[in-house]
Image (cartoon, rainbow, N blue to C red):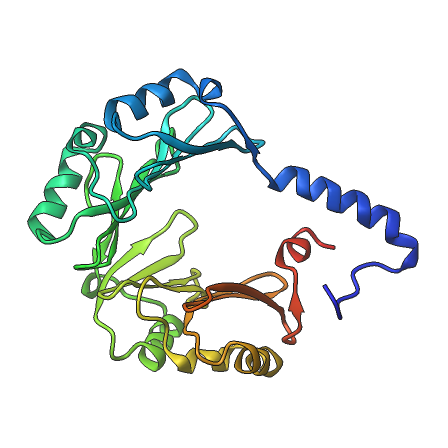
Length: 283
């Protein structure tokens, strides 16, 4: 990217080879339906018999991505077992209920009767730590986590004592938001769930690592956490777009801005615009 020097002149050939390796490792390839594992084909025919397949691709680690004509997005692992189902604007077929723990469905029905299941993904699939993370439709627009048996894997906010650093952060930037749940993740980090689709992740010491908004945007005051040069760049080029995601990276920060032109941007620790994939690979 212009303005960012990654290698000196002597490193040109090395850089080129690394770029090729990066592109080969990051990209997926288009495939034909018959190349999908049989179990994935059967899953689609069973639960989405009226839909046709718009596109399919396979990643180098043998995950399969399928887009149906109905707009539903599916991800399968190398064995053809579903990993993620994203219904977008459509209701999931009732036949899929058999794929989920009954307690999970009962909890959603009892506590969010006016919402539908919009997205569900397996967390740590095929391990003893397997669980489910679901996203509900706009009536609530919340995400919930469940263990492998369908029990809620989150606690009410009043039941969890957060590190002082994390609590001070929430008091400063999210004092007007309704805090619902706290989830302790495998890395011993804290994931905070607010009522209107906002999530904040803290490490075990209480330092924030990521903030996400699914709908209305994050508080504008969070821009003060970014380097001045990054804020100036955003104000000059995207003055009317809301902050939807802010994540700390080893090289600096990665953000996502919302409509009208959604865009992902990455900045170094001093606020210089960078290519995040290259920086994460140590280029």
